[in-house]
Image (cartoon, rainbow, N blue to C red; front, side, top):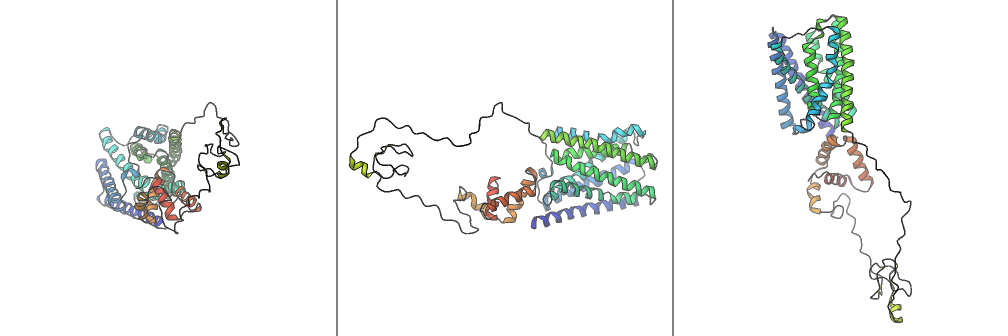
Length: 404
């Protein structure tokens, strides 16, 4: 389908751009050979901010997507930042147990904070803000989060290949680190879906990198490093899971139960008509002329002066049964007419658009608010089963979402 091909093409394009820029940076850093912490941190910050600027240009001018759809919003900002700090607390909890010394002095910490923020902002904008959102257009929410986590872990492979030795323990350490990154990437994805604000995962990612660079496990031996990575991954998974649970509980609507439910009636009550006691005098000629009620068209029994159907008094004889208003003719297949929905002028602008354009605009709304592609397809199928064509179902959904 067109939407699936377009989403996969955009994901491939932005992922290739990210990997090429990462390889260029790693090779240039290997050739230049930065000696001090300040040089390395400045180069990393400049690289990630450049990548973030490239992503903004790609989203704005190539994909033509507004930034709020990526999660850049001020809604629930304080809660999002608080959950982000809670999510990354699992790493710093394990540092005192292993006695890892800090690797930076006080003057360098400010630059380190800026570097970690640029890393978290860029990577989360690429993966959770753009790639995961595009994945949700093709797959369900859980599959989109898992696929994005694998791509997130695969993006770290070049840095481990070029930055570590070829020994067995180095390879084992790199594999364990990539596994931890995949798990954390999946948890970051679920946290982003639960909160709906990208600043939450940006804060969690930035503080995670800050703790990792400020207290690097490289000062430990290989066995302690593997143990530290495994335990920190478990503790971070626990704090991330706690953040996801808190976010879901905050989003869940409170359960309200009325004090007393009204009794349900299994059948409809019969309407009783109260007839007046005084009946006007009528000649036999008038009584023989009454056949049908002139107000509701119901048949009148012989000798009645009030209609038993509508209760109105019969003042003029109804000689013939009024003919019912004929229904409008059915529309031709695939055509849109005014009797389907009120307001022909509202239907015409939507009917002139193509099916793919209407489906793509509806899909963006359903991805952000209703649960994704599967919910939209089910609603379209329900309208088609009710007798509408696919075009009419898309126009009806577009009118419900006010896409005029």
